[in-house]
Image (cartoon, rainbow, N blue to C red; front, side, top):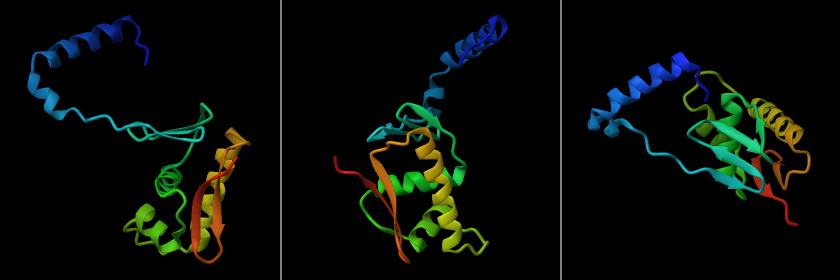
Length: 136
């Protein structure tokens, strides 16, 4: 993040005030580790994803979906599991086609950034999806 001179002065003043009150440390969040898998980097604190060091622009649902798949890599996640974890308590009745649509968009964005990715989001027909690393 870059500041101009006026912004830098204001920022420095705010930081001086914060430094005077040690209780502010109680409100600081602990950083979450970066998840790195085969050229894919996920920064949970910033909700950012990079594929081979190129930023991948995802919607909130695409981000949540990818994180859920990656954390459970190698496991086939059912449509119900995906729906419950990613969509939560939505009143909207979504079906397998909606999840499939989001997976399709996610694949497009990931592979547009890096076509030779060493992973795949595999469809298990009528069951769900699985994030898998491709054996070399």
